[in-house]
Each structure stands twice: as structure tokens, then as C-alpha cells.
View (cartoon, rainbow, N blue to C red):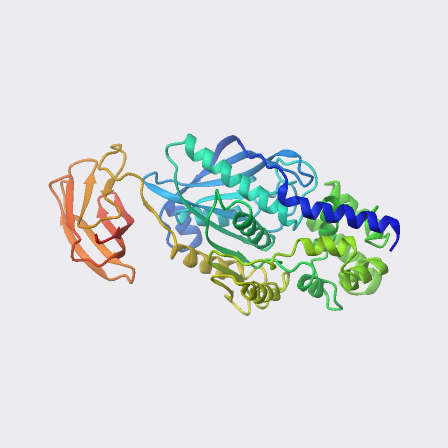
Length: 489
């Protein structure tokens, strides 16, 4: 081993060992409302049920860049528009984007998925990531530490936002999810919260979707084989990212053959988008070897290093971003589709096997549609995740007293309730309202007509302990909420 390589390995090892101890300073800088989507609009767009509409805020906050220097980052905060409830936080991590401004804070980059969770009753953050949106420099693509810190610092900022705005009240629950690169980012954030930030955050549940959790093994097998792989620009972005984070080579010529380097430099310098880079690299490969095989972009010795030398700085950087060598304590579902053409499904099954062997408490990998490719997997993965999260979500009324603004349609208390549930209307009811309680199986357990008073009392002493759904059909539409019945000792 030559001296230059030895020095690089020492530097890389120090970076890996010290990343857990970097000082992080997170702070909310500003927030600006940039849009609203009603419950009806959400339902018309996504053809599923929602519990509320959402207000959208562009948020600026501080977080360290890839070198640990404090920077201004941006992201989207999705706030449920019903202030009558206390909401859990949810961190949604977006997938690979095309350019700096193709991000959630610009209502791009897959922001729609964040609004879906917001409409389900989660105060949802969607960080743009370090090096994207307002953050300076090159985005460190599939870099676990900055993916995690960007999300966690945004969670801190969201709590500050809630402290400053009475219309958002938060409980202690935290849910974590994301798709594609966002799946990797979600698992990175989950790991960091459990291993480094457990005093401030307790992950309620995690559902990374279609993410590359085994960067150094399964993704290498998938992308650098003799089988064509059409998303060659991903390999270039990973090389740029890990050289930025770990300083593994002196120049891009050590990674790539000379005819590919100018296109990659153009992307690095933000002169072309990721899609344009992919097209250029694809055309060059077809001209060179007649197939879209990313391994043929790499210098021969670099390909040999990646495949056969785990001690090389490049291999160490790849391994440092694997996410399976720990044991999640929160319920975790690694959601995937077997026919995924961009992220090898064995990332999920391999991580499942390692994590469960390590002692994960409640973890499984779940194939939600064996025939779906990467794009087709989004919808079934989202539906699966919503059902999983909703089964664990706590959502209670914001006040335990019958007080509030005359703008509130109904006030319900106490919640949880032991014997008598009180429902108050902001004005006297002059017509017959239909009030019903349903159990979690959808069976109606109470049905009452309500008129000629602004206060209704419902005796629930005959109901078993558990979760119920209150539905009120009024002249202004349907009002619904969860009610928890708890019997006294």
C-alpha cells in the first residue's frame, strides 16, 4: 500500500469515527406560507379518504453541511388545517431529484407525498436535503449522515414553529418514512434518532420505502454487473458525493474514463440536470460498448477496487453509508417491490435479515406489489405505509375543556373519556344532527339525534376500552374524530 493511499485511509477513518460527534446547531430561521390544499381537493386528487386539508410552509433552518460547517437549509412543512387536534410529527424524505430547485420547498421533488401524509393528520416535514434548495454546494447524494441531520434539525425547527404558532400543537410521536433515496434517508434518520438523539426523539414507527440500504453490496451487485442499468447518472452522483464527503480521489479521472468526465463535471457545476447527465452518459456508453452498462464508465482499476478491495477509501466510503448494521427498536417496515428496476429489492430483504439477526424488536420487509417497477411501487408503498402508521397514531383533541373559538364547529371532551362524552356546538342546534360512534371494525355502537341545544352528552360506560370514531352529520357537512375510551381502575 503506497503512502498516498495510507494517508487517505487515515483521513477517511477519522471522518467516519468523528461524524457521530460533530456539534450540531439547529434553529428555525423563517417560515412562509406558500399554499393550501383543502380536504376535498386532496380526496379528488388521490381518491382516498383524508381527515383534513393542509397548509404549506417554506421553512429555512440551520443544519451542518457535509463538512460540518453550519449552513441554511430549506424544506416544506405541511400543517393539518384543523387546529382542534394535537398532531404527531412525520419526517418524509424525498427521492432523487433532477436539480437544485426540484425540491419540496419549491412544491416540486415529490412534495405531493408529504401533503398526503399531512392530509392524514400528521404535521409533516420534507427537507430539501443538504446541497439542495437554499443549502450551498453540491448535494451529498445518498450520504447517510447529512440525510439524517437535515431531517432531525428540521424536526427541531418544526417544534419551534409549533411553539410560535398556536394553530399547531404536537404530541411526542415521531414517524419516519421516505421513498427511493428518501428510503435510505429515512432509515438514516431513524438510526440517528435512536442511537444519538433518543433524549429528544422517540421514533414511533418507521417505514422506509424502496431505498438503497446496502450501498456497498446489493447496489454494487445490481448496478455494476453485466446486466444493463439505465440510471447511470446515479453512479456519477454517488462518486461526486463520496469524494466530497471523504476525499477519496484526487480527480474524477481516477473514477471515470476520460470521455465521461466532462459530462459529470457539467452536472457538478450545475450546468446540466441529472436527466441531461443520464442521457449524455447513456449515449456515450452505447457509442462505446453498445450497452448501458455503468461499469464500462469506470476506470478498470477503480472497478476492481470497488469489487475486490474493501480497504480502499472508495470502498470504505460506500460501506460507511450502508444502513443495516444496527437493530431498530421502533416498529419498522422495509417496504419494497420485487420488480423494482432502479433499487434492487434485496436491499430490503438483506437489511431485514441482518437487522433481525442483530435483535431488531419489530421489523419486517414487505413486498407490496411483486410486479411493480420503481415508479409503479410508489402508490402501493404509500398506501401500505399510511395504514401501518395510522394503526399507531395518537390524535386527540387539542383541549380537554369545553372552551374555544366560535369558529370551531364542535368541541369534544374529555378525550380520553371514561363515562360521559360532551360535545358542544359553537351555536345552538336548531335542526336534527346525526351523531354516531363506530368501533375500529366500522360497527356502529351509538346513534343519537341532536337538536335544540348546543350541548350533547353521550354515556359511554357500556363501551369497552378502545379506540372509537365519532361522526357528526351537520348542516355544514360531516365532522369526524377519534375518541379513546379508557375505563377507570
